[in-house]
Length: 402
Image (cartoon, rainbow, N blue to C red):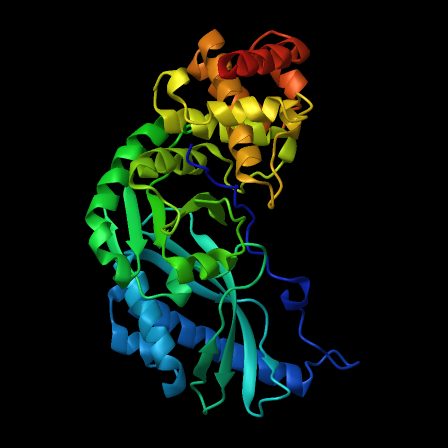
């Protein structure tokens, strides 16, 4: 069986220390000179950011670099090329509060900025990326000295922040990798487009993603994109990036050629089915992963599922028989992980056999999106007691794998 992915979720969040504050004032109510200077500088920084944003949208590299100190231009040139390759369609850079002085860097200022962007589609809800920028005062037009990688929240640096990218765009997807993997891009795009047609059926909120975004990571990129640090058994993951968008990352080092289609259907189904802000409740892990595994199997007979042996070993290795305890630990052995995914798949398969796909999607939406407790959701959607359905699902999984 192809071991799949832990869900990546969580939006980048601007830390409280960087939230906008009212300008400081003296006892008479007048704005203090330091606060006034920071406010005026902030206005000039905002003008520079607007200028740079227009240049990026227009494909004007010289204009994009014009606001930057020469030392920052190599980094910004790579970012510009990556974002243009990804067909950035919306880009706004919005200062968060006034800038603050850099105590260790005379003449420099720190400005937190929220970048908001869309890819390909011009009318999407933009994804927010809070970053720290540094600026140097130079008269009326401050110069951008550095843009740090996004580190707020749990999402970590996006691929376009830290890597050179080559990109292919299809009818339903955007697929990117590094120049070293360029030769795989055409075949990968074809596989992603095929997987997208399957994943579209599992858009539990009603509307499939405008484009599925897939990043194919080599060894170095796997450790760096979105913060790295994934469990050793992870072959891919879907991460919520805000604005209702998810991005999928595949681990080039662990993929078998015969398993790419299954993995893509699995991960793209996460992108189609999960709530806009992601969902990480461990007690419904079996349902989220089970639905993705069901989509990954794409109608194949249940006895052809590769993880049946692992389900059998899990069932005989002290598992307590509860679906809400299936989520594996990050350091779990491969058999434990594969067995957990397999039980989730078989439980969802049993529910689909019994009620059909649409009621199961309604159940998923009720539990995962609306966060209704599973026992109430079962009664609302299926008209059954969850204790009975739960035991039926577990008994089915044990029977199939025996």
